[in-house]
Image (cartoon, rainbow, N blue to C red; front, side, top):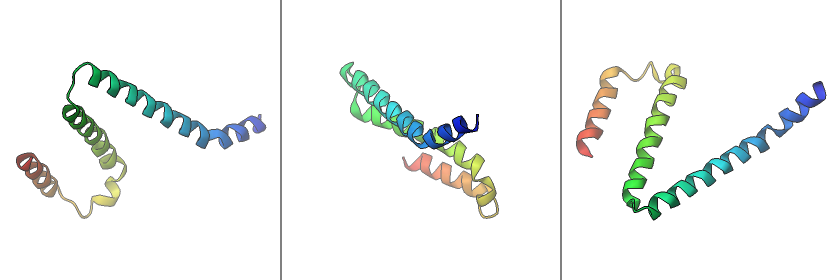
Length: 88
C-alpha cells in the first residue's frame, strides 16, 4: 500500500501537467469553434480577460487575505474598483 502512495506521489507533477495540457487544448478548440461561428476575436479576448479576473480576484482575496489585510482597507479597494470602472 505504501508503494502505491509513493508512485502516485511521484506522478503528481506529470498528472498536473497532463491536466493543464488538456485544459489548454479544450480552450483552443472552443476558441476555434467560437471564431468559426462568427464571434469577433476582440470580444472573445475581452470575455477571456473578464472571466480570468472574475476567477482570480476572489481566490487571491481568500488565500492572500492575511497578507494584505493590514495594509489595504476597504475604501482603497473601493477606490481602485471605481477608478477602473470609470476609466475603462
